[in-house]
Length: 393
Ligand code: FEO
Image (cartoon, rainbow, N blue to C red; front, side, top):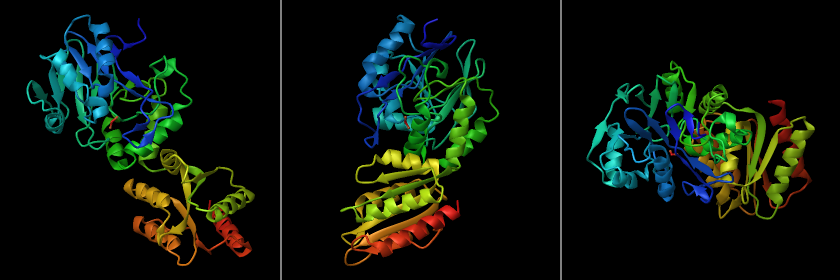
C-alpha cells in the first residue's frame, strides 16, 4: 500500500508549504505548514477540502496519481479559509461536474470568495452523504475557527475529517500518520497553532469536543499536520486543556525595554523567582521575541508578568500589541503581576493595571514602578514582587 493511502480507500493528497514566511500574514513558520486534503475513493469519489492556491498544480497532480482519469463526484468543504478552499476554482475547471458540498454558510462564502453558485449541494447538521460502501456524516463546528466550519465523519471506517481542529504547524516530512513520523516537535507547534489561530474560540472548541465525544474515532484527519491514530488521546487532551484555558505551572515574563532599565527589572524578578525555587521561567523581550511563541507560552503557563517602559505617554508599542492579542483571545484567568518605568510622567504601569482590570485578572501583588534609571531601591521592590508571586504558586 502506498504511504499516501492512509486507510483503505482514503488517500492523502495534501501538500507541504516550506516557503511561506508568515501564516495568515502574521505567524512565523519555522517548521513550515501542511495543507491537508483527503480523497475518499468508493463507488463515488469525494475530496475533502483543498489546499492553498499556490499549490494547486501539485495538488491536482496528487489527485491524478490516485484517480488515473476517474472523476471527482463531490468536493466536501469543511472549512472556507483560503488555505483550504483556494484551489477550488482550479479544481472546478478540471472537474466541472463535481458537486460542491457544504452547509448554507459555506455556500454563501463560496459565492463570495469564488463566484461559484452552480452544482452545489447544501447539507445540514447530522445529514449523511452516501459514497457506496462508505458514507460521510456532517456535524457543524461553528467558530472552530470560522462560522461555517463543519467536520465530516466516516462511520464505516471511524475516520473524522476535522477541519482545523486538532491541527498543528509543521510540514509532513515523509510520513503522514503519527506512527510514521517523529512527533516530538509537533506538541509545542500544536500549542502555538492553537494559541495564534483558534485561541479566541475556547467555548466553541469545547462545544465541538462535547458534540463529537460520542463518536468512535480511530483516525483524525485534520487540515494541518499529522494524521492522528495512536496519539488521538493526547491530541484531544491538548485541545481540551487549551480550550479551557488551563495551563501548567510556570512563569512567563514578557517585557519591553528601550535602554535596558526595564529589562534589568525583568532580570531581577526572574533571578528572585529562581531563588525562591521557581524553575520554569520563560523570558521574552518583546522587541525581538516571536509574538506567536509569546502567545504559545502564555497559553502554556499559568503565570504572566508583564513589564513596560512609558513611551510617548503610552505603553511601549510591542507591549500594547501583546496585551491587545491577549484581550482578543479572552483568556479568562492568569496569575498576573506587572512592573514598568517612566522618565518624566508615568503611564505604563497604570495602563497595564487598567488592562488587567478590564479583562478581569486580579494582580497577585502591587506593581513596581520605576522612575528613570535602575537602582537599589527598585531592585528591592522587584525582589518583593517576585517573592510574592512565588509564594502564591
Ligand atoms: Fe487552516 Fe482556519 O484555516
